[in-house]
Length: 291
Length: 339
Image (tube, rainbow over all chains, first blue to last red; front, side):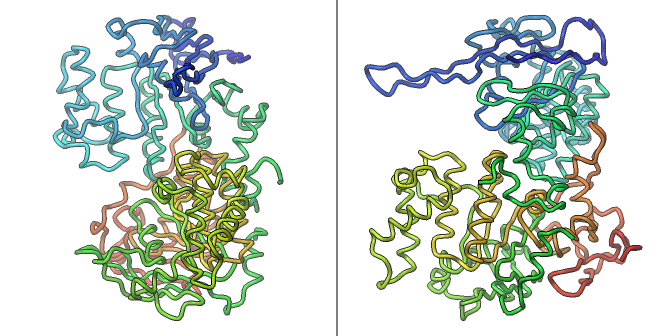
């Protein structure tokens, strides 16, 4: 079904043979609550056997529409949920099936940035405590200096630490989330729609920050988005998800220039583009069929 | 010039004006939220209103429907074709008669725009009966008309869909219902406030197509509000760029997006053009963020974030251009040499 494309040459070859993330035939079924006394509730297959590998230092994109299983996949990668079948390995170590207590290695090597910064930042904590939280949880020393360093790195300045999340704008909040994710010096960053809630001018700032940090720190990036243009800009390789499956995967350029799967073709056509619009394309041209 | 723009310019005479907004000025508490907003829309014309959050787009759209908060102090005028009175300062009873009949709105969030306890068919029928008076269709006829409208917006199996409650429909289907309600009385002006922002790309494509068809079939005027520039370029013929409660640039889509003059428009276009930037390379940005209401600078509203700002910008730049529908307000416009 899905053939992971040949891994591109890793930019940071520590142990070049083990990929940063390896996913094999990953399945996740959800049992819906029963609605009848006689029948069990229906089973929803959120992931129907997904396999792919992300090489170290690679910027990997996952695109798909709501309900395609992107977020389920992210939760499984981060060890926040257990799969019903298949396996997730992060840097050679199995994640799936392990209890939270044994996931310490994952928490220090893989961190998350979520879409809604307000929903993922505790409104009652000062920014410095938010950023320090992963350090506290992992009992890492030198918190104060590290927090100041991180806040500088994301362009907020150390003095931002004494304020609360509500005192920041959406883009600044996303910077706080990024600082927190980078606190334990992870090697992998999972970003789940990190710029979808931001305005255009701020989106560009945050995208610049993410790409700068990823290349400066040699991070592996898994970037999930429904916005094709953003994924195209950020990622080297893309997987297109539809209905719990990866329907197409390959180098970004190839997927965007020559999509093979009908769903990918439809998705690309449906995304409004300034260039095509100025060339005379109207709303009807976004649809696959002329009907 | 693109085919779309050419088509937009050729067919309309000045007499087919649908909406005329003149010097609209809104203050709320100590905040001066809209400054001298002037624009007009002709019959069959699709106009986009773009800008980032906090620039006053939604406030403008609410003003078109007389939905501004009671304590807002509004000056200027909003005239609508077929309505004898000015919408600014009109009595609530008069505004209620206009809303949903002459001007209708498609909101961003269909779940909050629809009544969760009412079947969607009844909600469409309601807007028909409310405006038809005693001589209008009876309930059965209104229901039949509602099913017809739901069919027009591409709801599968409209007869059954009319009996559904909003929560039983998907986001795209709900937005179609909202569109059916908005189009029910063949309004002369359709205002769309971020109608597809909450939708997936393929669903967005369907809904945008339906909106454009619905408006074209009625030869209505459309004001389309969004922060997504490529959506505006796809759907609209003309565009108004708003920042800090002022219209800073206006013109045809092909002109403004190909050759922006105001520095804000230029920055916005550059920041959103991900196709031209090198892969994973740096994107051009506008420094800082949109100030909160009341924190915009005097003079040119954009000067606190503009790289070209000089002392001159401390006074409000005059409008440069042949009319309110085409031009810009900037002392240091981009592309000066070609002007």
